[in-house]
Length: 81
Image (cartoon, rainbow, N blue to C red):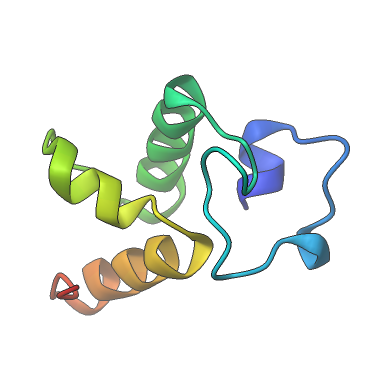
């Protein structure tokens, strides 16, 4: 979903390590990418990202943390870090 939502043409989903950071040395995403990804999550899964910079940093830390957050929201509980 990340590759599709952000049109990452040079990245294949299988190449993304689940524990790798989404920003900086990981996928190299920036704040605009995070906003686009948040909008895609809301559109596809009905999951809203709150305006909480500290919590959002935890949520967007890696593919795994993002997936855990979405899964938790879909199951009705926000996962704890």
